[in-house]
Amino acid sequence: MVLNCIFAAMNLEHINALKKLLSAPKKIAVIPHKNPDGDAIGSTLALWHYLKSKGHETVVVAPNDFPKFLKWMPGAESVLNFEKENTQAKNILHNAEIIFTLDFNHLGRVGQMTEYLEKAAAAFVMVDHHQEPSDYAEIMYSDVHMSSTCEMVYHLLDYLDATDDITSEMANCIYTGIMTDTGSFKFKATTSTTHRIIADLIDKGADNTAIHSRIYDTNSPSRLHLLGCALKNMVILEAYNTTYITLSQKELDQYKFTKGDTEGFVNYGLTLDNIRFAVIFIENKEEGILKISFRSAGDFDVNNFARQFFNGGGHTNAAGGKSDFSIAETISYFESLLPQFKKALTK
Image 1 (cartoon, rainbow, N blue to C red):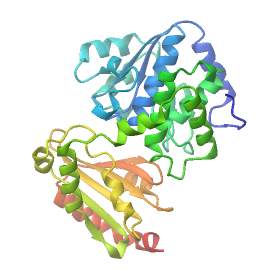
Image 2 (cartoon, helix red, strand yellow):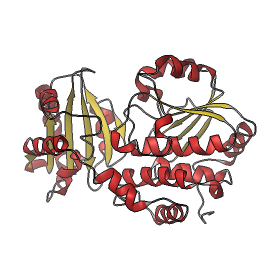
Image 3 (cartoon, rainbow, N blue to C red):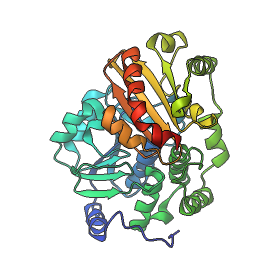
């Protein structure tokens, strides 16, 4: 399926360079960001399936583990976990001739893997839709207007004249990433082109009903109890149309937190009338930080907010950040910032 659209984000020079790079079998590593989500895992696995089908020796190396609700995805069992399979992962990175980095645009987003990527002799290819990309990649496909990196992988295959090569396994992976990063197709970056791609993926074998069920309809009692705790902790700052949630390490431990359990919790705040800014602060004692997720409605730019104040970034309406201080100190700092944004949040 060739879409009747023009995508200027990847120029012809880079398309031709990528075709040349892939013209003979290569050793390739495909890398998602740390704490990979549905878009990161979906895009890397879809590309992994394609590259393997073309005879490339390809491995997905993830910086750390990913949530259980994504492990049904075709090929997920083959993903190397850098934290747990360290020696093997380092060898893959050292010997790689090409390294694809997907769903991130700065090497600092891969945790302990950063130094090994910085030392790698491979040619780098970046595929990403976040703002302000760094310049480490020889070949870049960067488009902040795209709904997801998975949508970009579909377009990348189109550039390579390979959409007819999309298998049902690839279709399921790409569909998952688009669905999760668009909030089930409700976010502003979802376009008519996104829906045309989704239609083609279903035609190619993506099981949309099963995917939705596996992602959203599988809960444990402990996760629901954790959600209840999070909602009980919600604070509403009506003067700023803002709400935030806190979860301490003690609360996470009490409800037997596992990776991915807090996915989507921050979005509950935006379901409240008049709320334009929703935040969740999650304590992580192991890393010694607070992990922060920011969401907004309308044109309030949480990407700039996260970059300016919390060493993070992302998109206009969805971003992440971190704090090295306690929950109480971080909340105090966060609340002290809001008066300068009152006009933007209440207009």
